[in-house]
Image 1: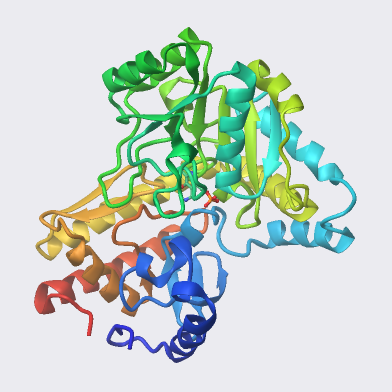
Image 2: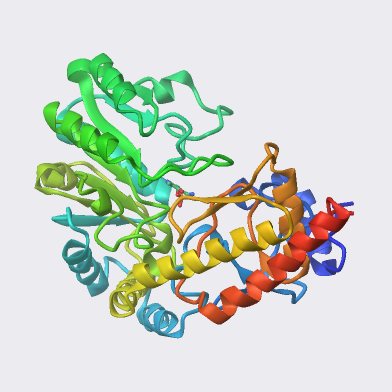
Length: 417
Ligand code: PMP
């Protein structure tokens, strides 16, 4: 029997979980298994529109996870769906790419500040792996430096799990601490003349930890050290790309990478990833071999062109930032009214919620459960995501429910039954 949240009916979800338990190892895989969200949350979903997501039992929630990042304009944005549908109707997977591949590459080069070219894949892990391969191909070297605790995907070279991973898969990886220029410098020294790449996340967004924006001195050191060794500076913009700054997430600190990985929000939920690069790595991009049967699909590329057009037209990042500030400040105030000190770290568009004294996230989990029963979908230890569909009215409706959830928490303690 799974835990249930009082006031929430999840019959169909429970039946699907039972069936899944027989035919899907562990009942579900990866970051979308129920164990990754508060106990009692629905596992299965049926639809979404705007800022609302609907589970298989027909419960609607104001959504602050945005499908863990991909939804940036709101669920099922009609213009994007129409563009994708037209491409799908014409033929998604053919004997070669469609014209949308060129159109999208041109748009990426126009939009992303460091980009002289683009290549496309499907998932963030594909894009990050492509970046690492490009860096090694372009430098003829092996060592790749990554920040301890940073997430870059679920393939052996970078998976957070060690199960099924050999030491050889990570033989040429070494580690530094994010925002610690001295530790990066030491790792660069150690790599010596075998340094292929320094990999940085857009900001520090490790699971369950306070988020940190990149410190300007750290970002500058990463650029200086990579340039000094003629190695690649790789920006993993998979999670944050297009949400913070259309030109790239490190534009704010004035640092341009050599290679950037994008995915998640690039096509408002259609499966697509991209790597952009500068002239230094164009030859490697032409000569090394990158491919996948579905990496040329027209529909997701048409969706991406439309998504980026809308983000430009509607001043997407600035408006999502403003929505995030309203949500952040309102949530902190709701906590304070009920006796809780809430910390909302990271960029407002991608906030991480933590409650003072809640080291094991149990209070945050109980708050999320109480909010869910009131129609608001939050996360207790992963950063959340806002979108262009989060207008003032939606946020205020969510905040009223969250205030009530805090009040319940203050009165009754942990909500789960
Ligand atoms: N890098 C970052 C920063 C991510 O957040 C993710 C996905 N959460 C990935 C890479 C991997 O992307 P995907 O799950 O699409 O393979």
